[in-house]
Image 1 (spheres, rainbow, N blue to C red):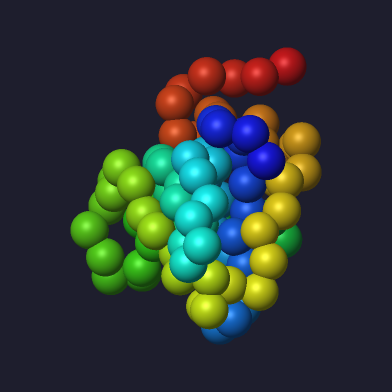
Image 2 (cartoon, rainbow, N blue to C red):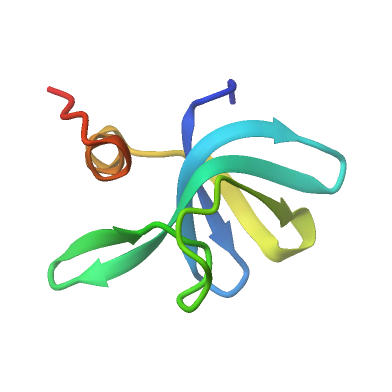
Length: 92
């Protein structure tokens, strides 16, 4: 993964987070502009936080690797929605 790639972090709890990759350390994955992925009917939605009751718009978060199942590149269609949601920019 490269810096600023949009990635999906899947936690051991099953929760999914999306954000821009910053770095990987021996113990953590760091992403910026994180959103939690939420069900929205037949689609998915994004909340600008990493906890349902957490403060919104946290600029950066470290995920402990022990709490992560995987971190993968995000699907192109989801990247477009994330970009629109997080910045207002509409990608074609």
